[in-house]
Image 1 (tube, rainbow, N blue to C red):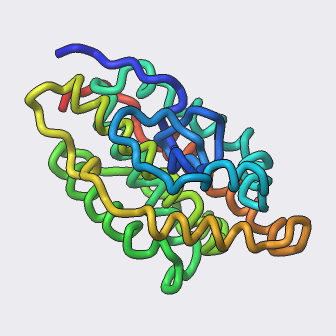
Image 2 (image 1 turned 90 degrees about the horizontal axis):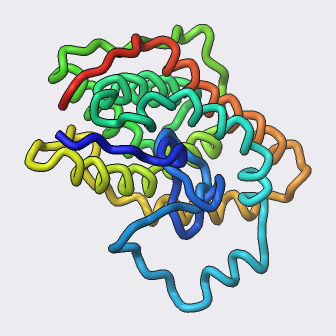
Length: 236
């Protein structure tokens, strides 16, 4: 089966149009990562992109302030970036560990990512079980308490990168079915609402500083997940 080599930008990513991170990112979770979308990119209303760039809000400050943590989280997944298919099962266990931890960091009853996060963790649990894997768990008593908006930013911001990754893995896997985790999910309405929520925050205020600090901690959970789950090559 043909191997697949993805750029380091595929690990945490975000909506390509309205996202945190570099100009090309995506997969572990990328808050606001502008991305490397390929074909089939959704069309944005005329003039929207220019408006977002001309009037940057707190979301862009959040992206800038958390870039080092985002990049460090991506680096933790270097084996997967370098050789995705053989390390796909490992990647899934890491995603479950990190997302399950994120879901436990705060009360998400009113979070915009609540339903999606529950769906993703349940799907990852099933995918890992299909592979005979048991994802590591980060002890609850060691988890930080994260603001729901930071969790929304991380989870919803990662979805466009997941779509890019799904397309590339699908091409490399040929006729083999991909794990259910890669099934496309509707996230754009919630993501755009989260962008609005963030841009309404006055930069420099206590809440803005907390969102930055909590987003950094959220990225750190992916680094921890990559360390906790044994790295072992496998095939899908």
